[in-house]
Structure formats: C-alpha cells, structure tokens
Image 1 (cartoon, rainbow, N blue to C red):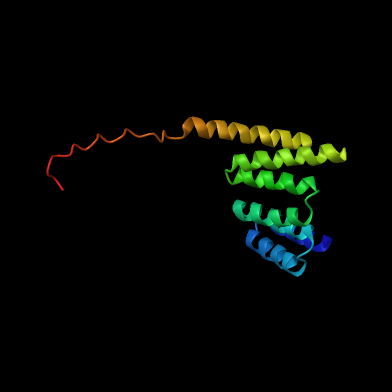
Image 2: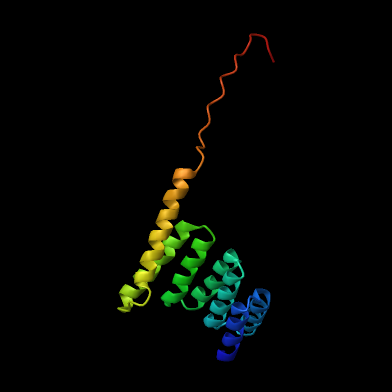
Amino acid sequence: MDQIRRQVLTLVRNGAYAAAVRAAFEVARRNPKAPECFELLAYAEAMAGYSKAAVKTIGRAIELAPERPAYWYQRGQFHLAANSPREAIDDMARVVEIEQKTAVDEFSARAEMCRDAALSRLDEQSRTAPCRMRARPAPVAHRAGAK
C-alpha cells in the first residue's frame, strides 16, 4: 500500500490527476474492505477537482471505519470544497465528538477552524441569496355567467 500511496501522491504532485484517480480507483476496487484505499481515492478525486465524488468516496471509508476522525474531517473538507457548508459543519461536529470520546485531540482544533469557515460561508450565502418571496398575483375577478 505504501508504494501505491507514493505513486498516487507523486502523480498528484505532478498534475497527472486522471492517472492518480485511475491508480487509486484500481487499488480501492481490489481492496473493497480497506478504508485507507478509499481515503487515497477520495484524496486523488479531490485534488482533481471532483469534490462531490470525493465526498461519496470518503463516505465509503467512513462506512468501513466510522471511529476514525480523519475520515470525517476529510469529508468535511470535501463538503466545504463542494460548497456544502451545512454538511461540513455536521462532519466537523462528528470529529470533535469522536475525539472527546477517545480522549484524542488530533483533529479537533482543525475541525473547529473548518466549522468556522463553513459557518462563515453559510452566513455569506444567506446574505447574498435572492429573496424567494414574490408578490402574489391579484385575485381574478369572476364575472357572472363566465365559464
């Protein structure tokens, strides 16, 4: 796995995103029970600009290892990149929750920063969203005898 990881990271670093995604996909396909393979694929997808695909892929890693805060943190980052701040906030809250239960504090500070960024984005979206209220149409007067 280390050799494949280095290969994918090198491809990403060199801008060969499609090749990185293909290589990581093949590893994940051959190892469907290994969450780290899906993490690698999600990273390659995110670097290639496929944020929504990365969200879905890292979701598979979370299904396989829900106790790992790193996967929740990454998904929150991918949600933020995909302009889904509400989902990012939920994932960052899960990171903090897991780390509080395990007395590990590896991602909590970064999760709080990401959550703050997501909250700012939500605030910005709410201020710039067009007003969805429209004037109601005037009632139609019915004439006697009209069908």
